[in-house]
Length: 353
Image: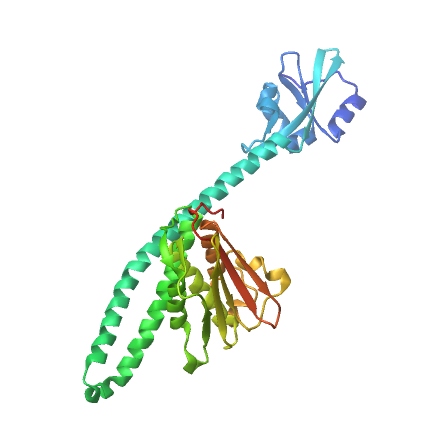
């Protein structure tokens, strides 16, 4: 095909060539007879590469197709053009903003990709926690056995192994910390995957609270824990998870309580159990009271206090899984009181993340 639009006046050709929009002119069969420089720039084709081709080569279904194969949303306006060579069509092409429907589809795709990434992360977290827990448990059992063996040695002889025993006890403590960390990650993976289940039974919460409090009470180190609880208080709950909630609350109180006494209060009526742990430490600002219950959040710098910021998140989740709630009442510089309220006899329900 020869040069198109040869009989157009020079002024008309100049207008087409210099138009600010991309112009594509076709004949009555829909074949391209002309594109201007703006169209060449937009599509990435030179004029001679597309003249004679159908318009669909550039604009299949109102989507522009560049020479490198990439697509872009196109806005097309067709106008008739009378010439001595016959009736032609001028196509004005603009790159348009994606439609709302297109945006929704893109957002949906991004959401699916993000969900898949989260699923893979949670799967890795779960597998890693399981794989780490097995050798850690075996190591801890072996270290405990060695400590017990040393303690069984005659005191007169044991003095020679005092340094070894000190190192072993330190290794036992560090292994215990690692085990706690792995168990926390395992719980997190179960929560994120919706796989954490409660095993409820009738439990004497008063006896359990005193037992846990005794483990935390070390007066020689300045750690004093007092318990205000009835002699016996039975409720239907997951014993292990209730203990986990209390341990997290006491660990938090010990960490931020500045070595001051910690108070535990346990009470109940026919419908509800209320557990409160109070410290007299640094307290919590009002704007941080909800944030600290989120994953990996804390009210103070991790550099100063350590930890992963998961204890309160998991504790609140466990309280809600029982059908209850966890809140905090605190003032900066005046300590904090963490409160857990659980139904005394109701069945557990699925907690929302």
